[in-house]
Image (cartoon, rainbow, N blue to C red; front, top):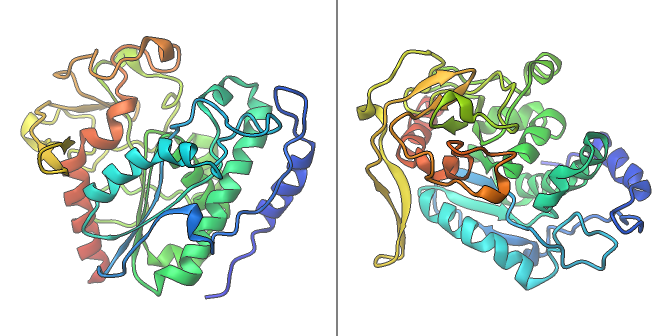
Length: 327
């Protein structure tokens, strides 16, 4: 498969020469050579019949760059990659049934989300260009025609949504089983503008975009998921607003020190959808509450748990969608 040269991404990189960071120095755009395995946490082992292309969430709070690109993580440094490695290792274990491909990318540090929206969109495009380049390299050199899942959380999901909108060919979409873009949102305007690229899955077997956010009560919906129009309940994979019994929750993913593995453990809670957020009223609102981030994620917002809270449901659903895809 020939490399897809996305003109939108090229234009974005050209425009970013003019973007200034917080110290007034310009960000110098450059392309990462993803043929260099230094820029991959995992390149898969091709022992399985399907792949996961995984993009990690915001893990960087400090830039180690040259102070001219301080809104981005400097992935040339081992300590910056180390920030991402714990998350990626956990997910490689969780999705061990598949060949696991996970690039490093120059993600925005957490503080970047406090920037004015127009500036934020420009620098987000820079991170999205890395993910696009990594994905195209993966498709050209690693995939070899296998079905694949896109998987991400938070900023990782944000970047995958941009990839779905701007960086995938129709042939690539046909190979994609599903895009699990956990912990982010799609607005009504985006859905109207990209109805095919962002086609939401509304059942447990269809191809398409799978997205969810969770809270313990309806007052805890934060800015990341406010206005979402495609969120699904991950215990039923439907958009019904009915209350679903706790027995439908198949357990959360948790790291086990003794076994050095990720296990699925019970976490019973009934659920229901409210404005496309999954409400889990039986869970402790303090579960993952971080006071420093309260403005974005108020108490009861489970954003920091979304990627593992429904681990049992996600793993089983991936099997279900892949089986249906192969029929």
